[in-house]
Image (cartoon, rainbow, N blue to C red; front, side):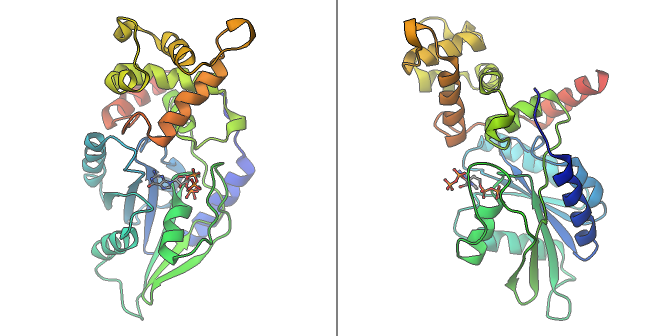
Length: 290
Ligand code: G4P
């Protein structure tokens, strides 16, 4: 899938993160719990090499809990890494994070050795929501279109706990085809940069293979056997169900695509995760062979 990125922004972010990383003790990497691997940026792994890392699987309220556990176990086995799942707007999110960081860095703390932490994440993972919750007011701007938070800010979460927000934009890097679709389905990719029909079909293809029951519950097909439908048949059914028609009764695929994408982003079908560590490994293998 063709996605329009902005290498200029990326280079600025890279330089700013590389500079800041030298002065912090550890890094928090925010990920989307519905697509943890796709929402990682390999550049960050490279820049933060050797620094302890807390991975936050955010939007856990929208993600499949069983798969979240699998991802947490997967990350917790990695060196210098801990992972927690979170809903950025939940009460107590700040305490959860500061506690996890302090546990990871027992030798930092106190006024002479404040714990200095850099928080990073690709647009739309919920960083502004989390930071707003931490400072108790609407200062970081949140919004539907990705890419709003820009300037660096330092937050004093305690006298001896400093949190640096990532300067610049850390865009995702598309390594495998599936991650492009998953990022787009989640809303992490700006609307102008994607073909919603293509994204909706990829999403339906995944859902019919891994979350068929949720699809059936949401769109109650009255035709049998919906279990054999392909992605197009599902999109056409959703169009019919939601009255997405053009003049002359033709199927309005664009409208039907918007329905399924909005339902997924809002969690209307239930809690869904679009990748597992094993699937990710397989996708990587295939991508490397190409
Ligand atoms: P960013 O700074 O990383 O770019 O992300 P931001 O906080 O702007 O969050 C992007 C969207 O994700 C926002 O929704 C926000 O409310 C939502 N969000 C953030 N964290 C969570 C979470 O843990 N769970 C759920 N369910 N949603 C979360 P929006 O529709 O764009 O804006 P709004 O409705 O909050 O105004």
